[in-house]
Image (cartoon, rainbow, N blue to C red; front, side, top):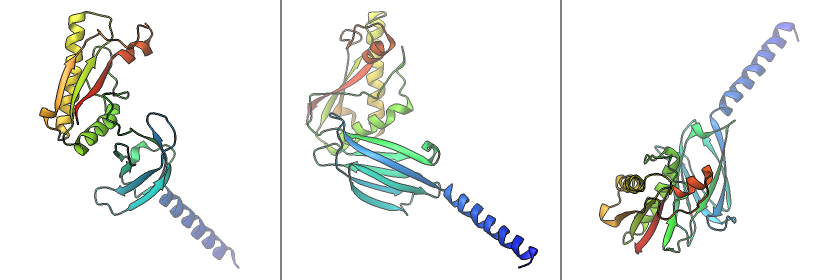
Length: 227
């Protein structure tokens, strides 16, 4: 075999390798776990995923963990459900990937209709009523719960840290529940099913002075009035 042929074969091999590497960049691996939001224990669930916007790639599986590939740099819709739990639905975006992987922990809330549900992932900055992007996932779960239970009526209860001017704190807590109400209305929930109540800083969860304690006092809770 002469040198020219050898170089040609090497060139072809390198070209194939580069082609394979290019393909690899179009695939994102998603690994997920499903847990009970109350106990944090693994939870067997039904998982469905599909590419968007056209759903050309669809898959279903069952268990407390799941794995699938997001292909061709497309975002995917993920739906997770289990009997006795509120369903979870979210869009997984390719931009979430780190080193070609996305890790998800899905917390399903028991469908026990407890009187009061705290929105743990709805965090407000000091003196602010703006809803951040990080809060959307939990609010979307609340909207799904309401859509799945059309007779349910809720009351959004707003709280602030106890420090500061009591009158301003009361106004701020009202602005926060109003912001959550508007978000739910935008998701198709009738405003007649959503009541609001402001408590200001009169019912703090903690009297601590550190940042974590003060953050826990800035919260919105959901009281189920009718189901």
